[in-house]
Amino acid sequence: MVTDVVEKVKAKREFRNIDDNFVQKVAAIVIAKRKRTSEEIVKGARALLRKVIVPMPSKFYRKLEKYKASKEQQQLAELVKMNRATREREEAGIYPWLISLIKSLQDRTGSEELLDFGCGLNLIALWLHGLDFSGLSYVGYDVDKAIVEVLNSFAKNFGLNARAYCCDVAELLKELLKEKRNAIMLFLKIVDGLEEIEPGVSEKIVELDGVKIVSFALRSWGGKKIKQRFWFERMLEKKGIKYEKFVKGNEVFYVID
Image (cartoon, rainbow, N blue to C red; front, side):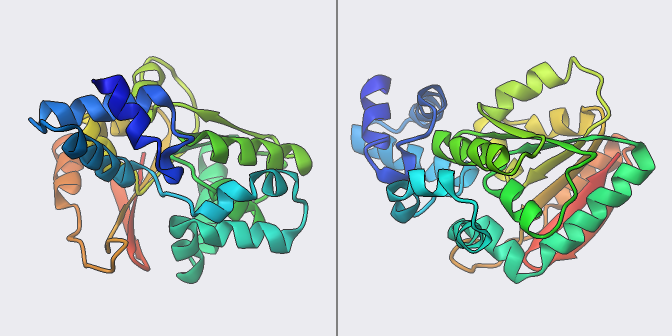
């Protein structure tokens, strides 16, 4: 039944490039919530996936090869605006602030590695806004194979020390917890969805070595106001973890050492 559901979920264009194993995992979670009919499960799985990924418009997939080959800044800027998360950050002027934050953390920690979980098109947006990659390696992780292809082509086209991988972030974190590394890590508007898929994942994130920049949306895609995540602050305080908090546009950021 799960295999059949995966095919139906991926029949919709926005989910066609999502990793099969991840879709199967999400479908199993929906089934466990006692969704009984195939229609209910497919609908529930798509709704849960939208909490983890930012679906790209059909135009992105139609012109995928064009975007992979692009070296024009105007075309890349157009691409960034197709993604709702990166577009919102651009409109709110968040990327210049985020770049300044990353640079200050580099200076303080000596880190030369930027890891981006649920990366979307952040790499391109950061580059367009002037992030210096000469002393910084970038690794992005996303479940959309098409986005990963675009990022890797972009990095190659511009000679950046950057790469992206298609993977399940929740599973990846289990491996990273075993490692010691001095990295700056981005978890931008992904934790809410991850918590629904794997409750308690926030605790794994804050226990990672390195500096974590975690953000949450303060408005839904439909414009509805979302409460701040005071549960997250209480969890940090209970663990005795220091953090800084910043509200930028419709997004709240936590910087955690």
